[in-house]
Image (cartoon, rainbow, N blue to C red; front, side, top):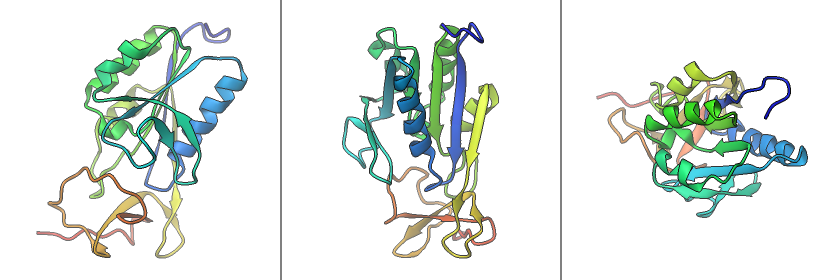
Length: 191
């Protein structure tokens, strides 16, 4: 399939909220389409921020996508596409890693985007495991809303205050619930 490598591969785009992960995923899908490659895009059912059947960015760009409840369903929706894109990988189970490895072994280009850290700064699986298996990794940064430094953390807010360490890991949201912060400006409420 790929004249240069003769194999598939895995690309992971990661970083904090508002770092441009989905924008970069959309850019890569557009470029693949321009190159004449068939693209299949997938997103988790839990993420309904920009409409059910689209991968959408905070900047308003969109791409039609198949919504799946679990990563295992990705195989069921493929029809020979050369490029498989998965947005919001952090909302999938660890099964996504094996699915991506299988797709790459099937000579497909797999492009995945998602958060690598939770709002508490802990690894947000399955993205860290995907990073270990990826052939190409891009870790993007946002701008800290507090000081303007490069931001690598996702600050969750509850009523304008930092979230509590024991709050649920998954909370789908955007500007109303999260801010990009640098390590020094990131806060969580302890026990």
